[in-house]
Structure formats: structure tokens, C-alpha cells
Image (cartoon, rainbow, N blue to C red; front, side):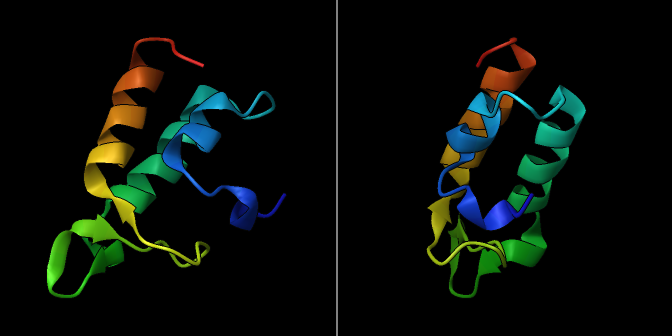
Amino acid sequence: MSLSHFQHPFDVVRHPQLEPEVKRAILASWASDACAVEGAPALRRPPELGCAIALDDVMDALRNLDQGGR
């Protein structure tokens, strides 16, 4: 499976075939400083995405996952 089909953090959370640990790993990698947009620390651009996403969205998705969300 290619990660490029995920366009938003909640796409990862809602994916029915991924284990929670895999979802958490994907989201954690997106949240990492390595994905930070230079000059815009609140934005992340994971290599597999064509657009920037807000760090707040990634963190919201991680919290939702930790609460058992789908």
C-alpha cells in the first residue's frame, strides 16, 4: 500500500486495514520536525503528500486514535 493516497491525517485514522500501531507510526512521522516546512513550523509536508498539512491536524488525529477513534 502506498502512503500517497492519504491526503489528511484523519484518512490514516479511519483506514480500516491498518493496525493502530501502524497508524500511530505514520502520524508520528508526519508530526516530526523532519517534515516541517521551512519558515512555517506549524506546517508539515510529509514526503508522500503533495500538500502541506497543519501540525494541529496531525496532533488531533493522534489524540483521536489514542481515544479509540475511527
